[in-house]
Image (cartoon, rainbow, N blue to C red):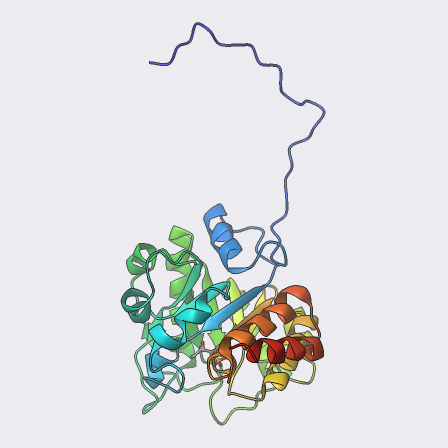
Length: 293
Ligand code: 5RP
């Protein structure tokens, strides 16, 4: 039992210091619960408000795609340089050591392969498993304008509802059909619908023209996917432009793991995202690190 006889009458009330009440540093996310903010703070570096997510969930519909044949050999050496790993639960359980303490964003939708209509997805992970895997966010594909648009939107809203019950944020991934135009108008529509319906942050693609209107009109943070492999300098320039035009980070896969020097590339991407390094300087860094890789 606690000893109550000797209690000192403490006078350290600091009456002259008002208690701090800080706004959360990520836009549009001030009114969500502590657990959610804490998980987001594991994804988005609190010092810069930005993130480098390393995406290697492609196998969930593509199988062992180029660069992802052996995740243990090719991807795990990069993991230490990412703020977050974006992957599937199968890879998390089979390859990633539980001693890995950086944050995890787990793909929670699936159900089709590249041989069929990709938009025909459902939620493919129970919320209980996301909790069990201690993930920092769940990712779901949203196909605005796609064949199964409504189904994919409802997948997202269900995931948001389930995640909200337990403090796990939802990342909406805007998926663009092969025949659809990738422009700012489309991404303004897609990202805004996802945000209006509750997604906590949104992955989209960078577009050369008017990308800043996409980030400005989306009330929650946006990260960009890297897309198809392009030359390293171009990928760094795309990352730089997106950050300067309001993106809060990248969720990059192929342009890192299919690079000639993946460790050098992820370090160069980090310098652009977290240090505002120019593409020219970041490319110099890439080349100097590449020489040692
Ligand atoms: C696959 C995804 C990927 O995570 C996303 O496309 C990012 O990877 P990349 O930079 O290779 O495009 O969502 O569906």
